[in-house]
Length: 254
Image (cartoon, rainbow, N blue to C red; front, side, top):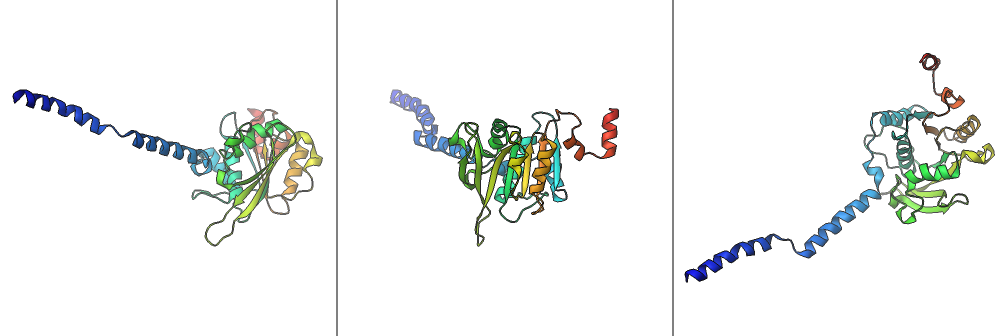
C-alpha cells in the first residue's frame, strides 16, 4: 500500500506540468493573432504616426502658410513628415493632435523628386510601400484600405504614375476620391503646366522655375506647397525664398 501511494504521489507533479502547457491549437491561434495585428499595423502606418517637435512645427505651420520648407540633415524624418501629411490630405484622416492645414474635400496632389527613380524610391516608397514588391503596396503612409487604384508609369521599373485614394466616408457621408500623381524635376517645366492642384510636395530641392510652376498649379485652390530636403546646393534661390534678410545675414556670418 505504501509503495502504491508513493507511486501515485510521484505521478502528480508530472500531471501538473502537462496541464500548464497550452494546447497546440491555442498556440497557433495566438501566433495567428499576433501576425494579424502586425499585418494591420503595417497596413495602417498613418494611424501610428507621432511627429517629433520639428515635424510637428512643420505641420502646424501649414495652418497659416501656403509655402513651407523642412530643411534638415539626412535621416531626420523629412520625407516621413511629408508623406504623413500628404496621406492625411488624401484620405481626410486627420488625427486629434493635428493643427495644420485641413482639406474638407477630396484633393489632387503631386509628389516629386529629382528623377523618376528618385521619386519612386523616396516619396512613392514612403506613401505606398516598397516599389519592387507590389504585394506590399499599402504598407506606406497611405492606409491599404484607402488605396482604390494604382496606375503604373512608363519610366523607371516599379514607378507609379498615380494613385486613386479613398477620401472620407462613414456615417451619412459618402466617400470621395483623391488623386495623387508622381512627377520629377528632370522632365522640365513644360511637364508641370496645365493642372489645377491642391498641393505639390517637392522631395529634394527643385530648380526655381520648377518650384514656381508647381506653386502656380495651386493658386486657384488656395493650395499648398511643401519642400523637404537636405541643403546640398548651398544658398540657392529656392532656399532664399524661405529665409528672412536677418536669417540670411546670420548664416553668412556663420
